[in-house]
Length: 149
Image 1: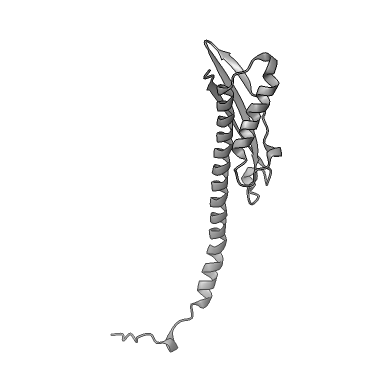
Image 2: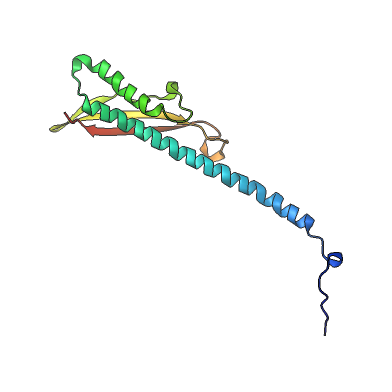
């Protein structure tokens, strides 16, 4: 029969080195997970902001109909509505907000529809290899809304 001695500080096996190695292996994975979570959150936040800007611009355009003689002024007002919506966003640069196609009114059968496309670049915190190695991703949203008046 084997007698097991209770552990005391003098006969304890050293484990400090093992804990340091485990920490060194786990820390990069933990940091990468946290940064990826932050980037996903920022991406979602900016996607929602661009979508809201396109909706605000289309909403303005549908509430303020235009004719062919003041089309340029109407388009400028619709674009300004999108910029006003984005102004409250953290880190917003008005020079980067673009409109891939000019805001327009389309006749679809008996309905008139306002169509607005808004684009804004998104830059991740670190250069992810699967996202083009640091090139900004263009967040583009197009909203079509029926003319209300």
